[in-house]
Image 1 (cartoon, rainbow, N blue to C red):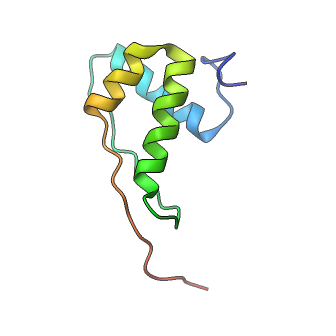
Image 2: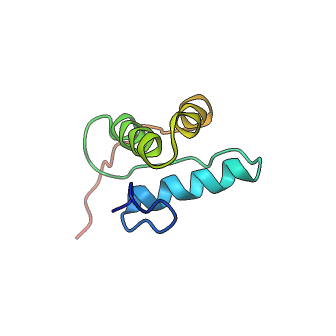
Length: 82
């Protein structure tokens, strides 16, 4: 859905890509995308998904801008709360 309808995304990743697109159009820098998923290299995985989806939704220009300017830190959740 998000690839065919980039102006009305329905997934979390589609919403992130649209927000990054809008920031680029405004001449602003991208925001940091912080994954809290408890998987190894969660920032790297998120970066791959966002950049690939951006390429399909808006083209190489946005994907390259995200690669050059975006921040996708890896994190680790060290505690589980009930």
